[in-house]
Structure formats: structure tokens, C-alpha cells
Image (tube, rainbow over all chains, first blue to last red; front, side, top):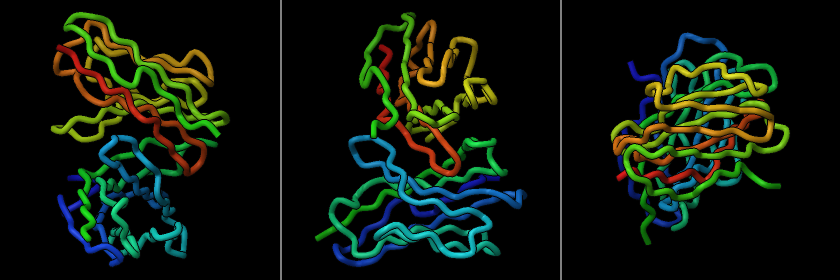
Length: 119
Length: 111
């Protein structure tokens, strides 16, 4: 079974509107972390946001928020007020377990969602 | 602050040649990861180190691939001999706690 599932290969959104990118995950660990990364056409991987499994509040970073629904095992990324520069591939990733002391454990990535922001 | 630094950014090499990719992690980060990205397979973890010690190399595709981390500020990924199917983007990432940052990638083409 896929550990990270992103069911939307491509999405379109109008500039200034909000968009939700879906991510579901599968793990039997109680402690885990969920990440979202942005990969523009230039190729770099840009860290956007992190949610820990024990975090009670949904994570937010500027225009990015993570809609974390633990019982449903979903960790959707919400981008508010979309901008043309948001056009990119977006990856959801999961770290299982507590992570190594002082350091991160390995990430498993989904297949990504290509977002296109239109005027 | 400097991010994760990878070199070379682009490399084109002939089949059979040795390729060495280099990575300087963010200072203070004690975990380092090598990932490979292809259209067919997406992002795959090849190997990761914690405190310079390899923890999991189960993603290394075969004996042609090797990785070292001689100290906290440097790691290499070597492919010898290289094959056309090794063509991919190779990312290095470093981590402390819940933050995992990627370098800009090394784009490898083997012809």
C-alpha cells in the first residue's frame, strides 16, 4: 500500500483564490510528521510546512496552512490568495517514528500535484 | 545562512565513467539524506546518515552506488561505472529535528 497518496495529478486555480491540495497517508506509528514541499520548474525542493502527529493545532506558515485530520489520515495543504508564483509541483511527505535524536528520519514522498495558477 | 550546497549542478558523462556528486549540509544539521528523482519513480531515498554514520542504505540501487560522509560538513555519492539509467536529479538534504532542507540538486545525464 502507498504510504503517501496524492490523488490530484494536476490542479488549476484562479489567481487570488484559495486552493486545497489533497494528501492521505498510511502508517501504524503513533508518532510521525507530515511535510509539504514545493518544486518549481527550476527544480529545487522548497520546504513549506510541517505538522507533527501530536500537534493539536493545524500548522500555518503565511499563506500556507495544513488541514490535519488525524482520524481520516489526511494532511491537505491549503494555499490562500494564490499567486502566479505558486505554480509548481507540490509534494506531500511523511516521516514515520519519532525521528533520530536531534535529527530527522527518512521521508517518504507522494507522487506530487502539479498546480497551475491562472490569471 | 547558507543552505544545503550541492555540486556539480549539472553533469553530462559517458556511460562507464565514474561520477562523484558532492554535498555540504547546513551547519549544525546532523542528518544527511541522498534522494534521487526521476519521472518514472518519483523521489526515492537512496541513503541517509545520522552523525556521519550510515543508518539506512536500503535504497541504494546496486553496488555501483556508494556514499560516504567523512565528516559533518561533507558527503559524496559516487556512481562507478555510470549507466544511462542513472540519469536523474540527485538531491542532498540535511536535517535537524523536524526541519529537512534540500539542496538545489545535481542534474546527471549519462549518455
